[in-house]
Length: 280
Ligand code: NAP
Image (cartoon, rainbow, N blue to C red; front, side):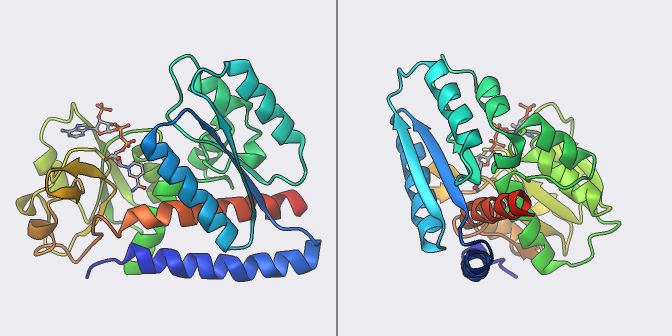
């Protein structure tokens, strides 16, 4: 089975559109997402453009605030504090990466946890790891929803996560632990990655190494979620060798068209959830 992230994301956005119509009739207002973009990194500009497009499409208020790359850190922090107080804004996202002179940590910690749609604030990270309600980082949430489409009951499954970033690997591990998976987190210092992968019922690869996971690393009937986005001479490929692994796995996400489209849909979902919490 090839897990169609594009279709799943479309369906999620359709559902959100309906939810937002209902919210509007109940509260006479709609969720609002503000994205701060610093500098002119081409990939960031594309991500932000898509975030704006899809948030408008589902009926949210959407705003992008742009700053030049030499903007002072204090300007960004002051703007975030202003947005924190603005009742019309449900979610704030500062597009990463930031220029070196701006502290990512300070920026993330200045965003009110209740408006942290990326789920990066330490309060949300702590809530997720304690099993409490929180904003969940968008890419792992997307992976999780795709996984649940294939397998409703994940209890007792052995999940191997490749990569331990705060963005992907660590929150993914927390989500799967909450579902009673036995979770192994692997990283660049793991001794025998192939051997770890061969034990897995579920593999989530978030590494950034083209086609790292080979067909003979995967147990028959495993579910494989590929987070990687790697530019190569032959185009964009994932961290999994799709041609080899799709012959062995029970289900696999393609790249492109797998996890990628889910990330923005989950951002919109998080914004709606923040709006609902603020109004409840
Ligand atoms: P990251 O911060 O660079 O983390 C990569 C992780 O992989 C690190 O934990 C690193 O280990 C580990 N690693 C590196 N080489 C390894 C190896 N040979 N064996 C095992 N582990 C290894 O990357 P990230 O931000 O999580 O992103 C990972 C990939 O996902 C990238 O391709 C990125 O473009 C993609 N991505 C996709 C989406 C999407 O929407 N689909 C969103 C975000 C990111 P150490 O900790 O030991 O260094």
